[in-house]
Length: 363
Image 1 (tube, one colour):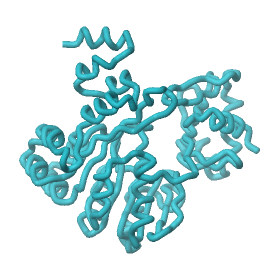
Image 2 (cartoon, rainbow, N blue to C red):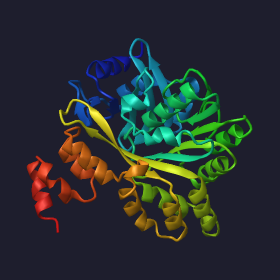
Image 3 (tube, one colour):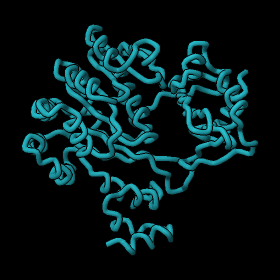
Image 4 (cartoon, one colour):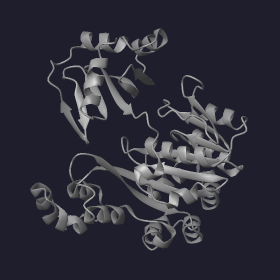
């Protein structure tokens, strides 16, 4: 058994989501959002390289020794499945392990807004799930694929880096392909997917202009595309897409979004009010005629007002969702305040003295 499995076992026994290994530090565990050291010696470079090499294939070892980062999945016997990243930094190698639960998430278990179910009823178009790293985007996408898989007779092709949740086929056929293992990258994976009779295509991440354009083409030609982006709001997502396109294609990009973007789900993952769990909070934008018009007229800065007044369509701004979660005592008010844009609305609920002082000194 690889020696680092002992650290992974300890992480799971403590209910932690992540294990971090780096030279010069003891192993670190992430528990409910906080990174905490375990009682162990600081790892030196030789020791850590030995631990890491025990879970690598010969090909992966060669790539890592040449200085490449590695993304892959790892199953530790009787412990669980993990999404893994091996990387290099100034002091030596490092690694991050993220636990992937065996049970597939559902929309109900994650508390996903019902409007997402309505979005999934579309036969074509694009749904984007956005947020910073570690905010649960992959888990949300897994729940959406799980929902389609149990309710529609379709062909789902999922491009992931790496494969996390395993989806057995139910009503749908689910084909999961891993970047670097089954296809070289997202762009080539998307090109291949369009020749594989898909109804639904999941793209683990839209990282560059090429993958974005390919995903847009797929959505425009009769497929339902679900994808993630590292943006933190609906407006920033739209602006990022438009800005990433060449100048001569931006008007075409706006037209595409106005006609084919079904909605944007931006999420953050916060500590619960009890401190013994985490809960996702969502900003939801549904593409309406009014929002499409603002997009085409270069008035994306006015979209938040449309979201704020679109509650009857299932829309909600992040600040609205955060404040409601705080009022219902579902999340830590101090963390909610940190993610809010208008922080003063959260001042009556904040308990962190340092944060209160900071808010008092803001204009």
